[in-house]
Amino acid sequence: MSLDDHVKEKDPEVKAEDRMATKIVVVLRGNCTFVTKVRNAERAGASLLVVADSTKEEVKNVIMGDDGTGTGIRIPAMLIGKEYGDILIKQANVTGGSPVTLSAEFVMPHPDNTVEVELWYSSSNTIALDFIKEFDKYMVDLQDYIDFTPRYVTWGCTGCSPSFKERECYSGGKYCAPNHGFMKGMNVKGVDILTEDLREHCLHNRLKN
Image 1 (cartoon, rainbow, N blue to C red):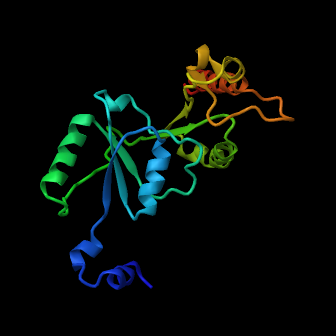
Image 2 (image 1 turned 180 degrees about the horizontal axis):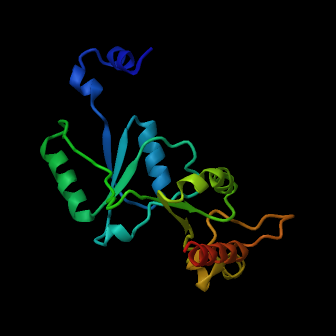
């Protein structure tokens, strides 16, 4: 059964243009992770999630990072400022539940013929490391066309215990290894992962030119 037939079966009165529309969901930023929001929206049938910030800040400085559970997500998502989120939510309330048309674009500047690629990961992420190893054999032919920059994900743990911060974090819990806890039988601590992230970052900056 196609998606269109499935919708007809559930509600035969639904108009054709509504069946074909891309479903964009707008939610407020809260306490759960971005990944949780995107996955819930996808399960609800959304094709795009727009997260409206809950505080006034420069959203360009906010990274919608993976919390380590984002594998399998297929829909895109974006974060917009609180002022724009308020406008969207107000407009939706004005229509009284009627559909609202929203246009969204993912546009990045490309002043030359070089593709700018960023990979956000941690040195403890085995899936990302496997990707880098596999991609390496193609990079020789693409090096004149790709500007590759590794980005390393950390998270804050200000509410964790002092012993956890000492073992897994730097700067009193400001920088911690993502989704890394103390595992029996493994002599790898969060601070070791962060140190390796920093080492790889420095090596990339020194060797890319």
